Length: 112
Image (tube, rainbow, N blue to C red; front, side, top):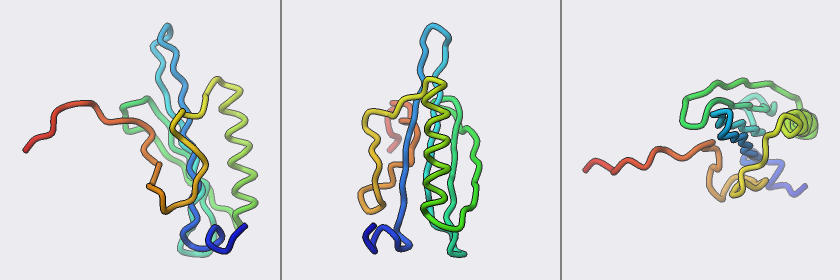
């Protein structure tokens, strides 16, 4: 790992979706590793129905490798349940956009 990836700017985000039109199912699941103020790393999990507020849970880990192991476990679990990576989602570090929005807002016209 480069020093930049180990520094306070480290951020990894994965966005998963599960859409089954026949069952009226449209769900998202976001996994991210984020630094905390206390030199720990948080595995943040956000999930819910696409277009809804959803829920979140934060699990603290002492180092990025430990958090990465947990992220991989959750990724494996979700893939077994039919979730797939959103096509425009890639593993990335911060600095190239937040990438954390699990869904697009409705296409209502902007108010001026």
